[in-house]
Every structure is written in C-alpha cells, then in structure tokens.
Image 1 (cartoon, rainbow, N blue to C red):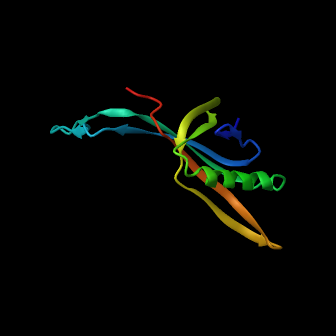
Image 2: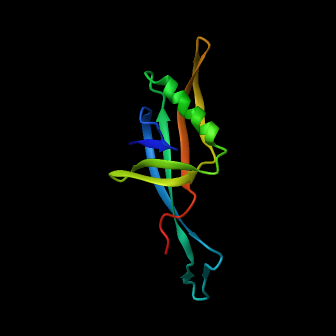
Image 3: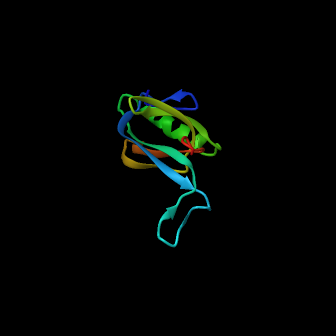
Length: 129
C-alpha cells in the first residue's frame, strides 16, 4: 500500500518521492536554565509524510482525480492517512494545508500537469512521554 486517504487508495499514481519526518513539540513550560541546560516539557512527537507523484500517461484520469480529491478534502478538519512507513505502513489522523503542481505544457487544448507535491502532518502526537 502506497497511499490511502479516508479509505480511498491511490496505488495507481507514479511515485517520485515519499518522505517521512517527525517533530517534537514542547509546551510553554520548556525553557533554558541559567546554566544553559535545556529544560524540556515535551507534549509529544508528531509524524508527517510527504509525497511527490507524477502523471502516468496510462492513468491521467487517476492523476487528475488525486488532485481533485486533495482540493475537495482540503477543508476537512482532518483526514485518515495510511501511508508506506518502514517495511509496512502507518495510519494516523492528519491534515494538510497546501499542495503544489505546475503546468508542464499544453497540447491541443489539453493541459498536461506535472508532479503533485503534498505533505500531511499528524493532528495528534503518535508518541507521548
């Protein structure tokens, strides 16, 4: 499984890059002591996955449908993301605030769009102290 959003699978997309990252969030009690030592107050670790997919000439409709899906669900509070992670997959409630795509060229009144780039970030921490 490559990518699923709200139970809709997008395995047919051509994959250029899949990335994963995480960030550790701290609350307002985090500070630096007079000695310079960091005083941490960790809320948790939030996962993120980024995808860059391309237009497969055999599946242009599926590629366009992926963009349309992203636009339609961009106003959702969150989506259920299932993505490749490690040797298996991971699922978490996520959000995204932007996606990007450039027009490659126009061919006989048809727009041929380039790669779609989108990053999903978790709504809640997956690891907590």
